[in-house]
Image (spheres, helix red, strand yellow):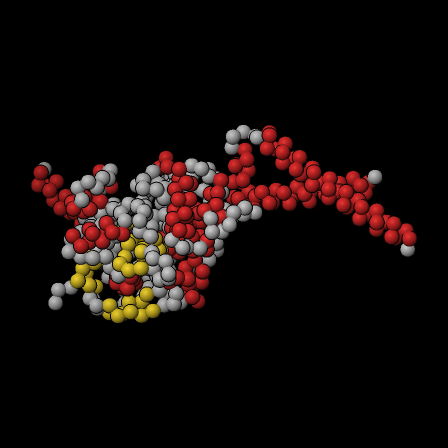
Length: 254
Length: 148
């Protein structure tokens, strides 16, 4: 009986396993960064979304990127706690991406594990692949491929600021999903959750005169437009939010 | 008599629409202030209010964020873009939502009789002034047409 149980457990392992903790090598190549304004207008799905709100990602550029390694998933609560013991999270969220981290804290974590935050070009290369797709999974929006604003309310009326459900723009934990649990949203290089779940801090500054740190990928609160890999958000990086997380990148040893 | 009654009703309707529209849609604060920006955003709490009227902790949190963004040098369109990118249409207001939000703002503590009476008085004063103006104009036009 014990042997049978062991056999069943082993058979079930591939289905239970998640990509958390894995790293993926991205080969050197050309990253597609940003969007052209004509394409941008066609990519806005909600008629209330204005192209000028996303104009900071125009025009489309080609950037040469050296080979690098990137986390297959966003850094999770469990991983973060290993380095920062004071980090608190409900036990059932161990495999969810860590949130409520400032840019400096994300950068500090990545340096402590021997890496750094990815640059915007690296992030977009990992998300869009060689073909420079609009979303990590392709050029068309597929609702089930990411956890985002319209997808979290499937079994509840989870709204921004709905304190009773612990989901607000505040520091309360929200509607994230286990990092690396959705194969449908993988990028061409096999990187998980580059659209939705949490906005990810990247290295560098948002263009313009105002000093703001960059975030990519959209979150569990975002509209579909923000899930496009070219979309970027600028934030002062001083506040902690429950839709901001990160993943790390690493150099390739020659 | 019939003309005067029609003019009075017309004056009342015009003043009522103008005053209500002003209360609901007019941004009373400058775009470079927290109130000016939050006039265009929805309250993130469960109430259906306009953010400028929201004093719940979640609303205040957004107002704090707007304040820090203004201090960092962001303009109103940039802040609106930030909120849409993060929260989508949850952060935006349709005219119907704004109307519902303002109605909730007025009635959330019961029906504020004092405010309603004051609003009614202001409407009546402006109605009377507009009515007198219209009557004067109508009489002048009648006199002119009679002289012709």
